[in-house]
Length: 379
Image (cartoon, rainbow, N blue to C red; front, top):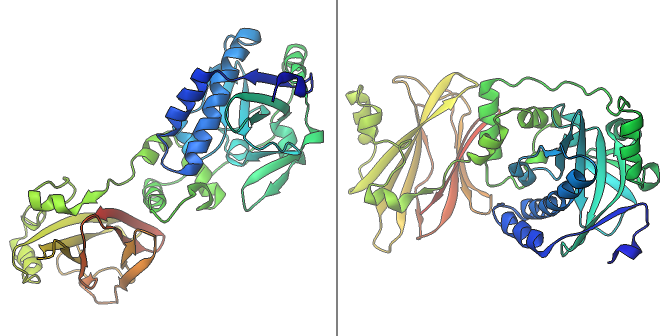
């Protein structure tokens, strides 16, 4: 596509080969196909449009988007003094309507004043801005899709000429561009911890649609969101345990229960396997103000497989496990292979022992009410 194919009122910009290459390279850091496309499109858009904007209209313009958010939500924010531009790129050639993720509309700290519809060619060689609208118009006139959580506005309701935006800013700097945004709930520390643990599950492929929007929006609105999203539980390599390479969060029974030797003995006496390795991890249950202990027992098998037994105990001696706390084994494809749930007077629960060939991936999940702790392993 060349510039003469674009209506003269629309902005068309060529993307340099350097920006294309850099954007592809940056997209490789994303963990999902959706995240890679979002990163590529937004980086192309940002690296091309921002220098043009600074040179032509707004030298003070600055980016206000962390790349980590592209793993979750499509869109880029740019600050212009007291106003805020939100660019939503799309590689589709269809421009009959403009769709904006709900996060950019209904999260107070994310919301903008002007929303620009950006079309990026699939190969990333060019981009064009085919229209813009305001936050107020999107809230009052756009249709809302509760399944995809997007606001969509017909193209004929948008302003095609981007020059109009600069004229309006000069003549009417106090133009009303935003409408009222409902406040989001305040999450407790325990809620935040539980929710991030839940979203870290390998079975969740699109976190933004997993929670009710008010809860999801409140998570994203927190300052620690980018850091928490990066802090997914590290993959545990079980074969390294035989080389005494173990993360600090997985302790020996003696270290974990050193002050309760008789209780430590009660753990050990339940395991009669020879030449086994045992490690335990404490898991807080915020909903019941109680902790449980996840214990793994590993044995080497003659066919190079690893024998694995998984048990769950209450941390405090002479306590029962919380009623209905569950322990589950989940395959790499996200299927529940086996699970067990505590009854009223259970002081431990366990999965049936299983054997894993080398490089087999699986997850263990401890759940209670709305809380889920998930840990990924490789044998």
